[in-house]
Image 1 (cartoon, rainbow, N blue to C red):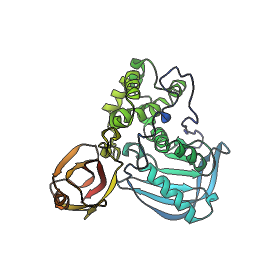
Image 2: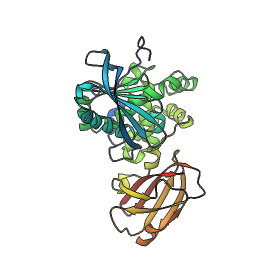
Image 3: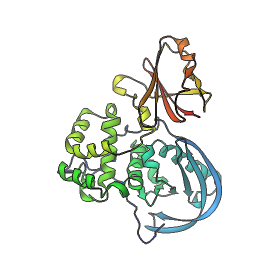
Length: 341
């Protein structure tokens, strides 16, 4: 880690009034772009001991060296991270609570945003989050405010963009051309820091209009697509694995669907076939969808009666990897991840 140059940028703390752009800051646009009810790739955290780590602490606005509690964080799409917990939390047990909480929340972010999150720095204090240096910085006192506003995941998307997208795209010729062609910015924050914040401010709303359009208002959809069409096209064209976000696309409150419940898959991992158990009990038929990591629909099964949910679903012709199942019956929906060996 190069401590001589800190790449640690942050989301806005408050909205900006009298905006010359469509928004003051994009994390405030809609709290439902990603929610705590959405699928998470989180699998586990494992304590590995205490170790000397140098992390950033906004309370002193400087680097600090601590004997951190360390945890391996495992997500189910072959990505891992290390949770670096400030010893101020007082015990391994309390530190593990923090590691699991944020491992699960960050696990709801697209794969492409987690790919460079090598460490998750967790301090106490009411200070803004940050991203960069192959890490995400968290101050747990600030989390309370983000959760009260329903924007914890949206903030984490913003910070993870700094960690995993900025280095490759902020100075890319195609991105700079998109900025020029759009002729403006999506937010005041992006306009104020065009080299530092435009990717993070824009990507979250690209995710909203392309993959969460049913969760945002028509007014917001129209504002976003009119303001930054070329930036949206840029994100359309880059390779960005959106799992598990891409697997949740059937969620639509406008169509009257409930928040997703869990399906139990057995066996999981599997080689050739699987059965499902729906925790809500017997269902009056419906459909089951299987998506790959890129959000592409691989299989669709129709389940016309309750007993058909209990059938054996064959996938022996699929390549090994991670998949996402979505079940829909009436106004009920169910989600589960599936590993094919």
